Length: 114
Image: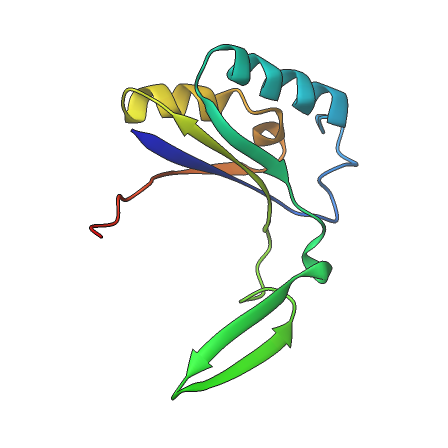
C-alpha cells in the first residue's frame, strides 16, 4: 500500500534549532529508504511564501499568494512510500530527520476508482 508522509515544521525555526537536520542527513535518509525499495518519491518544498493557492467557487477561479491557511507549521516536503501496512509506514516516518523539529503526517493513498 502507498503512504504519503507529509513533513511539517515551523519554517522560521526548522533550520536553526539544535536538533535541526542538515540537507546531507536528509539526503542520506532518503537514500536509505530508496535502498530498502520502499521509496516511490521524495521532495523538499520551497518556503511557503513561494506558494500559490487556487480555488474554484461557483465556476470562478481565484488565485491567491501563499498557503491555504495560516498555521504554525508549514508543509516542508514529502515522502511517498510503499509499505506493507500502517505500522511499517510509521516506522519509516519516525526516522525522518525533520521529525525531530517538526512533525510527519502519515496518510494512506486512496486508489481512485476510474
